[in-house]
Amino acid sequence: MPGRSGPTGSGVGAGWLDAKRPRRRGRNPLGPSDAQLRASLAGEASADAAIALHEAATSEVEAGAELGGREAEGGVPLDLTAAAFFDVDNTMVQGASIIHFARGLAARKYISVADMARFGWQQLKFRVTGKENSDDVASGKERALAFIAGRETAEFSRLGEEIYDELIADKIWPGTRALAQMHLDAGQQVWLVTATPVELAQVIAKRLGLTGALGTVVESEDGKFTGRLVGDILHGAGKAHAVRTLAVREGLNLKRCTAYSDSHNDVPMLSLVGTAVAINPDTDLKELAKNRGWEIRDYRTGRKAARIGVPTALVLGAVGGALAAVISRRKH
Figure 1 (cartoon, rainbow, N blue to C red):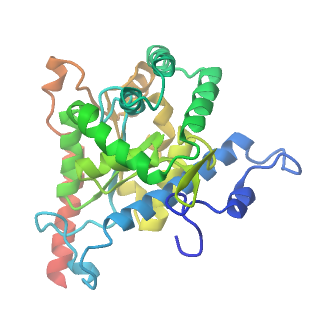
Figure 2: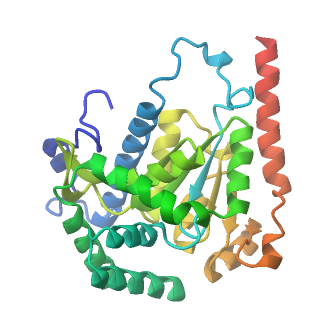
């Protein structure tokens, strides 16, 4: 972003990071907690990174086109105030994306089989119980940051592309991918939102032809990771902060936006937008979705996967947005 070293590529300046880090001394006891401040910082950094990566990916697009004349693929005018936000794990991708990446790294001898097994066990416990163990989170984060410290960001992205093609490409839920395509066809932005490192999340978004990705940001300097997080893992409230920040910077109307997730942990993000959809929901999210009247889509079994037809409310929203854009363009 102008006037600031970005969270990826050239790295986040140490002074900026220190200024943003939560401080215990002098903090208003009635104000936000340290955890809330870290979540806010993680969301802001994620939005910075997502926009920077998106701009880099589209830097070769022909410049000078009139705003009203820009079109999405297929000649559909862009719906500039609406977007869709998709969680990744068990929403867009079958299983945990970070586990798939870890498998690829283990196969390349970047991490040990023991670390892979330990991390897999932690993810399994989380999926079975639906709750995170603080010790598991802390140890997993520590090991992951120790692994990434000193490595080049470009190398990490390259490995991510290789591993995606090998292990993740065939694990995309067709039903969820169809929903994402519906928004793209309506000229809307489509963003992934995940705790996975933003560089890896961007690989998934790029391969799927989506707008970009919001993910966890690891501080980098001179093209290498320092091994320190900017804020915290993008999770829970952090995702909501990231979506809200991105919406402000992209001029999105959150009431016209849609969010998709499988996890009750993403309720802050789902509650932020005008339309929330539970995809392959865990027990708590399924119950909440029923109580709030949210759409529920489940692609985990052959019987339920047949319900791939897009929800009526989503169709009306997407088509309505595209139609409004066409009418506006014709008036001009």
